[in-house]
Image (tube, rainbow, N blue to C red; front, side):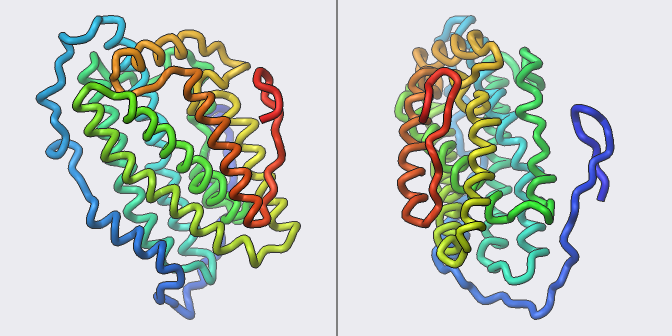
Amino acid sequence: MQVTDSQSHSPARTAINIERRFPLDLHQSTNAIGELYELAKRGRWNPSADLPWATFNPAAHAAEVLQAARKVWSRRAWLDYTGLAETPALLIRFCLELGTEVDAKYFLTVRNTEEAWHVESFHRYAQACGGFLDTPVNAQWQPLFNRGLHRDALDAGRSLDGHVLTHCLFVDGLEHQLAAAWLANTREPVAGALLERCLKDRERHARFGWLHIERRAPSMSEQERASLVQTLVEHLTQVEFAGLRCVALASSIDASQDIGELNLVADAGLGAIAAQAEVALFTQYLARCRERLASCGLHLPLLPHPALGLI
């Protein structure tokens, strides 16, 4: 399989597992993940019909607030859009790897649908605030969004469990915590209804990651556990510390405009919290994850952030 790197336009090869389907085992091995699949099916929603779009009143907000909100919500659509390629690739990887449980394969099918609902909702909210932005105003952000997660998920040379640890357990858990904080600070009805729906989806996404890793970690060798942790460390230092989800963590990119816009949206109650509040949430969440991972034998070290020091 040959793909093209979005930055260099040079061909890049992804090693794909050879499919070995038989013996075909469709018995549930992780009932809790099976329950997440059932909950997701019962919790389906329609972004067009189930959110009170008609109640949104742009005249209630200053022009600069609406301009900031369209940027904040556009950024959220860009983030969730990565899942439209990454989740199917992860599902294919689970299907190709011999011996992986069927529960995860079922669950990932509904996770992808929920990500599509989020993208549609964020896009529509940005439109209501003045228009969706299809690319970052500051081009320095683009490489962080164009990381080829679908290639990482499919790559047979990379650990499947490492991908789940990083992107399902940690990232989905962080997005769940952020959504909960945004919702708690929201006064505008459409943003509140939207985030309330997303929050339930993201809670399931994060629970899937924890259930998978907590089941798998006890049977791993010390070397395998260390390798998984290193995958997460690389993501944290190269991506999260660069400000992808919490813009105020950025040190190599000038995020001052993004921080100011986020603060405006938070003050207006349009579905956000202040930039420094996001940083505080991130550091607290990271500490809780470190403690819980240690109980699985996964020891995440303190990591140096250019501005915050060891966190």
